[in-house]
Length: 219
Image (cartoon, rainbow, N blue to C red; front, side, top):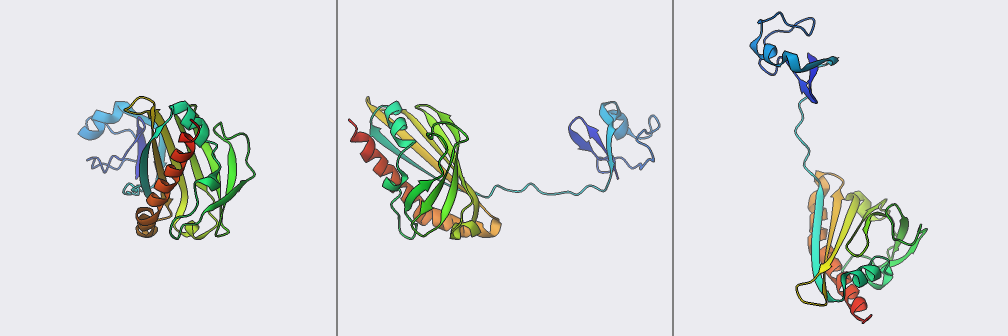
């Protein structure tokens, strides 16, 4: 079936009510009410000669968790301490989840998008981390990929985001941390959801609590 462009949208004459199947894209005037209506808007320079394949939109495979905490500190102080924090001091393990034992091959001071580092874990696995967003005093984001441990069978990557804002009380900072695993397929979603629900959210809360201790100790 010929497919033409109606703006940025493919136009399938037969599927949209046209009973004609012409050898060329131009219908005789008035031979088809549907095509006559849209004919002036069709870009005839873009056309293919294949049968359309109808596909349902693929649902997202993300499994996310969000944790929040208030700290007695100014947002810019909390941000400056947490972004480059020593990961071994806050990711100390939780249930079956391994602790972070160090970072390697870091580029830059961890203060600009595009900088990378390799994170090593107590079970011998590693993951690649990339800083993707950095707004001083307010927000930073990163991706985690290239899992070498068991997680590689469940997830392709993960994304983390942190927000820092003035708290409801004077002198406080509200910190929000969102982390999303991108599952490898629909089949791995249940297992990834279970890990996130039972263990990962608790791991995040523990790490955020340790961040709070360090930040408030700076006063």
